[in-house]
Image 1 (cartoon, rainbow, N blue to C red):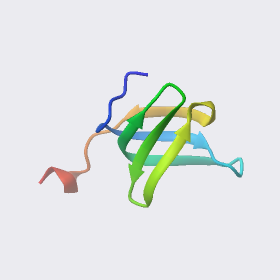
Image 2: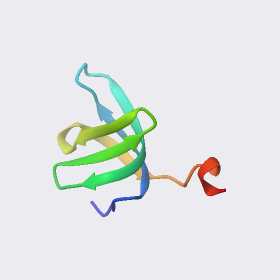
Image 3: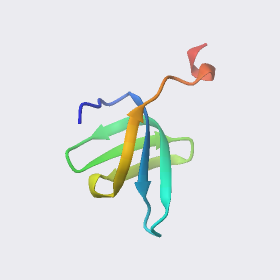
Length: 65
């Protein structure tokens, strides 16, 4: 994975209830087995084994000003 701390991403993953869930925010940790995403609701740790897909996303227009 070529993501770096500080980049804004969206990660789709399976939650503990077996539902697809998205985490949108900035990366605070990137490792071989997980990523941490700082979302509006707090930090979300997404294990690599539960990831469905993910991508870099542009900064929110509200954060560019």
